Structure formats: C-alpha cells, structure tokens
Length: 103
Image (cartoon, rainbow, N blue to C red; front, side, top):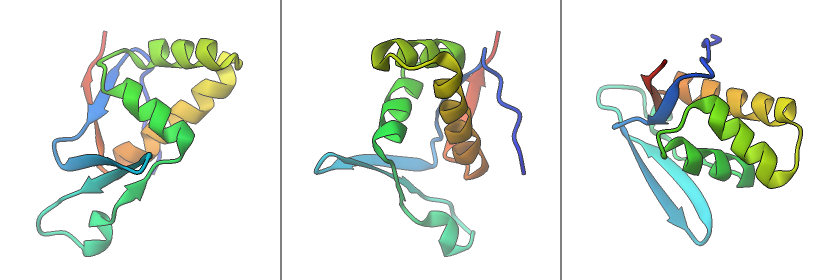
C-alpha cells in the first residue's frame, strides 16, 4: 500500500518505537501491543537510512531534509528525494514514523 508523502510535512519517530545505536549501527525497535510478533521485529538502518532518520527527528520539512542531504553529499536532489520518499513511505507503513505537521 503506497502512502502519499507530503514534501512540506514534518515526519518524526512514532512514540511506539525505541531507537538505539549499537556499535555504530542504528536499530529501530517497534513495540506494539496486541499485534503479530513479526511487526515487532527490529529494523536495522543502513548508512543512508541513518542519515535520513537523524534529520527527520529535527522537525524539518521533508523538502528541506532532501535539499540538505543533497548539498552535503553533492548528489542531485531528485536522487536524494527518491531515497527519502521511499524510506519515509516504508517506515510510515510500519508505523515507525508519523506525520506531525504540514504547511
């Protein structure tokens, strides 16, 4: 199921997750009560996911996060936007992210 991503919205971690960094690896641990155990499995972030995740929790609009990452890594905005949107869609579906505002 595709989720419509609003580039002017702010997304951040759901209150139903715990995030830990262990030996340089970022792990998102969901905790949902009354659901299948497969929905509570840890989610391991790769280097790209870690960069995106850290910026999401700064309460910035998604479009600003994309511009920032593109500038920092000297990568075209469209490439970064595709990665960020895919990442956010995936974590929204898993209820690990929530949309907190939009303009």
